[in-house]
Image (tube, rainbow, N blue to C red; front, side, top):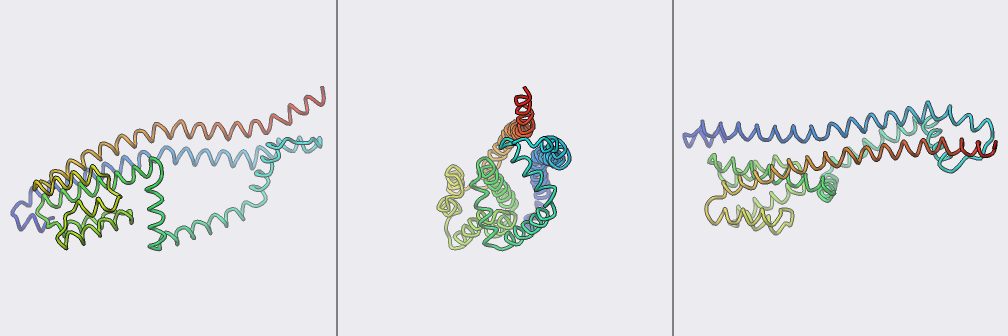
Length: 270
C-alpha cells in the first residue's frame, strides 16, 4: 500500500486509509475479546466451585449416609461416583487432559486437521455465522482499502488471502485469485464456492460491471460490521441466561442428590 501510495503521489491518503483500516480491525478484535471474557470467567469460576464441592464438601456429607448404611437413591450414587473419581483418580484425569490437549494441538497443525476444524466451525449455530461474517467483513474491507490505494487486484488478493485465518475460506480466495489471473471475474468463483452469501457475490458482480468495485466492497464491509456487532450483542444476551440455567441445573442436581437420602431417612425414622 505504501509503495502504491508513493508511486501515485498520494502517500498521505494511503496512510490515512491504512490507519482507519487498522483502527477498525483493532476495534473489531476488541469487541470479540470483550464478548468472550465474561463467559470464560463464569465457566472457570463455575467449574472451580463444582470441583471444590465434589472434592471437599460432598464426601463429608455422604459419609453420614454411609455410616447409617442407608440405600442411597440413584442421583446420590451418581454424585458419589463423580466425587470418588475426582478424589481418587484426579491424576489420571489430569494426564488424560494433557494428552488430549497435545493430541488436538498436533491434529490442528496438520492442514487436513485444520481444514476439518475450520469447516466444523462454520457449521456451528450462531458462532459459525459470526465466523463467516467476520471473514467476509475483513475480506471486503481489506480488498477495498488496497484497491482504493492503487494496489493491483492480483497483489491485493494475495494480501487478502494471507490475512484470512479460516482455511476453508482461504482456499476459496486462493481459487478466486487464480481465476482472476486467468481473466475471470471476482464474483463468479466466490458464487460457485457456496461459502459467500448470494447478496455479497451479487454486489461484487455489480461493482465489477459498473467500475465501482472498491466502493461496493466498502458497503459490504460496513453492512457486515454492523451485523457482527448485532450478532455479538445477541450472543451476549443469550449466553448469560444459558450459563445461569446450566449452573442452576448442576447446583439443583447436587442439592437434590443430598436432600433425597435425608428425606428417605426422615421417612424411615417416622
